[in-house]
Length: 297
Image 1 (cartoon, rainbow, N blue to C red):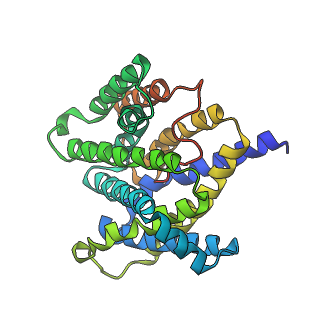
Image 2: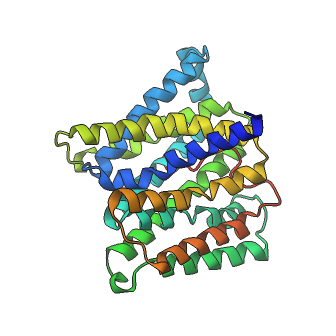
């Protein structure tokens, strides 16, 4: 198998792993608060093990935390708020609405990037924002426009906003070790959910829910992230960016197969408009704002 083909195989498996997340969140009989605590705890333990496997001592990690705690806190809090609102959007509406709302993060990047000092967005980015907004409205069923789906879409878009901030923080502080920044992303996100612990329903989990938590907390977070980092390292950034757009249709396919959702033609058209908006906003002829960071759901 050629190196290029091998990278595409890794991208395929990573896309499937990330695409399975919304359906799993909808299927699991664990509320958003408890799910976040379980998933982040497993991710934090797994990432800590990976950091230690690189022969980094606990003292060295703590020294880095003391020097850069503001950066790590900002990354973790934004990522934690992204997960909290993402889980809520899926629970409020459904897996597809949550996926579509979150997928607007790409068109939000140029606007937020302007605020962060990454340059003024061009007209194509603004057209991309308009397309994504139209797609978001179109994807919400008319007969529930004032109900759970509309609220879920709004919360999902807010989740995309929080996530769009994360790669900008990573890029602004790219001089820091990548693995440590990824470790901090999970570890410093955990307090966001710990604050909500009193609101969580801590009923005993079933065997099925246990394995879904393992899948979300370890398989997706660690294996999916590891594969995507390899893909983004081995393939051109333009191709990596294009492959990232396949995660939305993969999510919608899993939602139909696993949760028995019925997607209308309007939903698929809305998804197409959101993807087209992302392509225009981010562009495929230049380095995308999200460099080697996977859209970790």
